[in-house]
Length: 189
Image 1 (cartoon, rainbow, N blue to C red):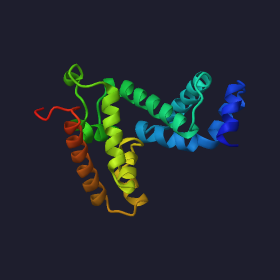
Image 2: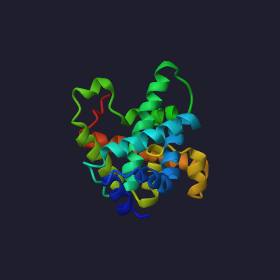
Image 3: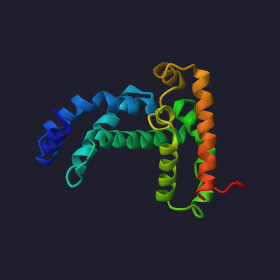
């Protein structure tokens, strides 16, 4: 079933919309959630929340790209669940490592008051991503949007783990410089 037909089911308030969404995008959404949560039970709950949220948002919203719409919902729910679960118990894990890698590119709580709006920061990051060659952009997104492991990225892009790590390091450094140039970050911090 194509996306327009699935969206039509949502608009008609047919519960088949959830079933068809799960058939077409369930593996995709599961992959996003599991990379963040690293737990099957939490991933299952996240997927249920994803379909419930999609049900509540369509209508009034009618997505242009159903995969991106569901993927974004899944990612946001998984990140909120991860933050909630890890507020009490800090530990290892891929998500902690990813946030650690990006720490200097993220706006800290102290900078929030003086930083430009989130929209300006998002736009600056999008401009940075568009400036990257396709392969580098895909590697960056796989790591920092989909939260894929280094080994998985290396395998998928036929690279060594070391080459992936080096590429990500250089892209983080370039992003940091770009955000300073755009006025999003203060280079004295």
